[in-house]
Length: 223
Image (cartoon, rainbow, N blue to C red; front, side, top):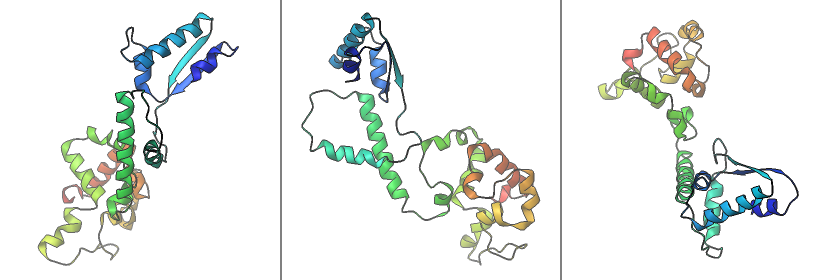
């Protein structure tokens, strides 16, 4: 344990980094119920009594870091390791379970081949931070654009007609063509600072630009 190493060393200032938020919160309690937390508190008290200074710093785990497959490996290894009598805090179990589920979902998502997969190659709940602040109508438009399905590009299926063709470019009319390919909208794209790749168009900071672009090319009601 890091605290034991600190206790036996000769330094004065120490920093301990941990991704266990539940442990840090529990250490703030005056009367902890967890025996292990009480032991840690006592060890910290002993170290501070020797005029040492300790900083406990929380580092969020698995944020923006690839390799959640490691969770699967650790889970498998747990079956081979001898059982532990030390209870695991609920928060840590929840975090590990969530990471494991997200990893499984990502593996299934990697098998998908559609327009939404191009827009969102990685499943990430944080991608919804700004989109949840949009009006219901604007949110519907963004979601349809992400899916690559719209009235103007897919109504032919219901009407049992031929797929639509772009009148300006004489090519199949798709959401991707409208957003980044059609030469007729080049100047309007520049005006609204629309990126030239699909993934960047749907970033949080570009959603308002995207909606403004769709409105100016008179496509809003056709999405």
